[in-house]
Length: 109
Image (cartoon, rainbow, N blue to C red; front, side, top):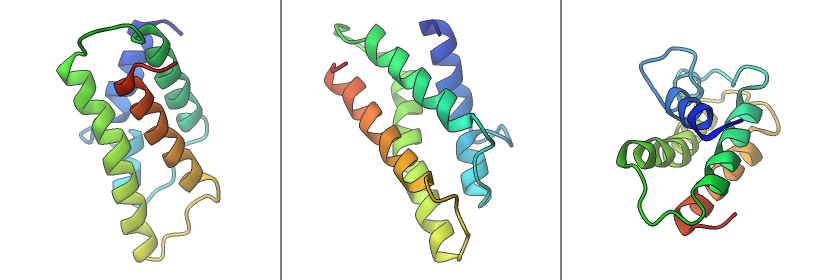
């Protein structure tokens, strides 16, 4: 995956106006579609490697990354309180998203 594609994946999966995006599905108390988290994690890894030495980050991308890390956890916890039966690995997947985002911010790869 190239950086342009990775950026598109992150931006689209963080977009709450797209009904089948990762965040929109979690907000609707629906699990991610198969392959959605895998694609998102691959995109995050691509971004992490590409931006490892970057001194500045695109504000729109940073906002999408923040939304993915923060809102996914918040929507997951809201679902748990509402007794949603999430897939067993979703909690760990959301943690991996947060870790990958932190690594991008820190400039680690």
